[in-house]
Image 1 (cartoon, rainbow, N blue to C red):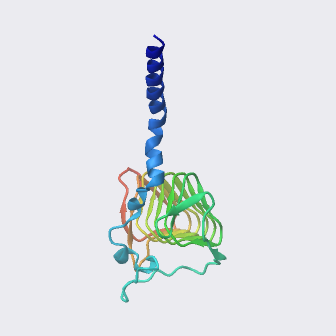
Image 2 (cartoon, rainbow, N blue to C red; image 1 turned 90 degrees about the vertical axis):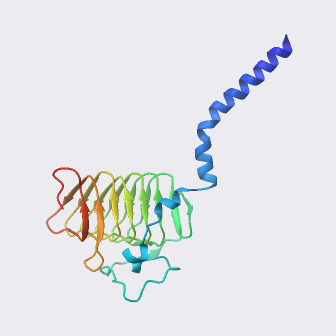
Length: 211
């Protein structure tokens, strides 16, 4: 009788342990072998943003150039706090991420929370943010942007393709795209101030969106 009870207890413990640990298996597998980096790949980066390609990509000589206004970049960030490496030059943050004012992040970003770009900061790679992207005055995103929502403060710029699930708001002097290198913007709603500019194709399916 004791043997049967022991076997039943072991079986019950085994099943209970599996039920408790199984929900954590996908997170463990993603941590061991990240697969989300593929979502940052853009189909034609050389044609869309030749001047913003990684260092191992040489842009074509006749490609249009995007000229940034003078910015006081204090330093190029070697790493981000609470982040792990993601690809060759990228970084992945499990929570929120902040790019300090006056700094440059040279790679791609995957942010599971919200992203805040400080004043006059620059992110050179593609950005995938599961939450909100807030760009302070004079900040710039050179690569493609995938986010839940996006807010560009005064004179902030995003030069790559922008794909946003909900709202995009452009303050005075904000800019998406470039006259010499137009891009694309897709969002549910778009709010634009009088002096903001969007160069390229705009897709806003909701009524009341203002291109």
